[in-house]
Image (cartoon, helix red, strand yellow):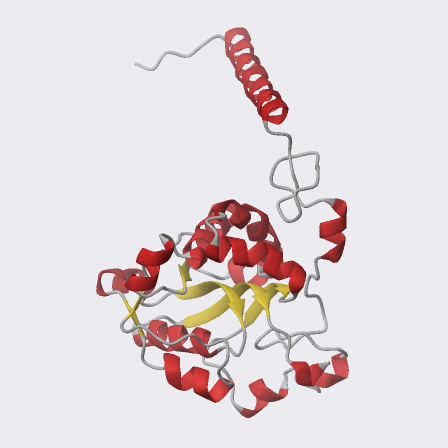
Length: 264
């Protein structure tokens, strides 16, 4: 039979734990004073941005395309439907996409170290931003699935930054995560210097749902998670694989969105 402490004892035990935790945080702050995760200036709490870096962080807010989430310079650019020209001319396979940040110099200071320099702690900074930006998408998601890395790139990098982000968001939002729901069936060339059409051809057919995860994808609404969206080619390839696996719908949530220079 489970032993239950008297209320006074339970409260005393709780207070002792609280003081120990607080003492541990104070000791950590004395040994390693909190620093801004972007510029290393002093801050009040570990894992924060300083006031200057926070002020330089460009959060995406309306107006933006209600389809792919690309920011607009003015609401009129979306027309009556609120869609960018790309979504009107060739609608993406995914239902909606949202991003927390514009992909600029400040966003790169948060994302590139996560991606290339083992700064997985930055996921704890980006995840709350992404949760706010994608609140509506998270509310209807049955599971989160990260964009996959090819096994060779995963071996080189040691972790998948999209999976790290998905797990952090899943904990915040209380949503299940399938870190290995998708796989890369072939290695693709870097997409940075390619046009949208070249990107689509390069990643087309390179992603598939993992067979052991089909039961957790079929019949469900999936939220695809990645660090950066540019043209949407990778998101479309992942969406095609998830829909082929039986997903009812796919939304996309990314840390940052590359603005379309044609939209100002």
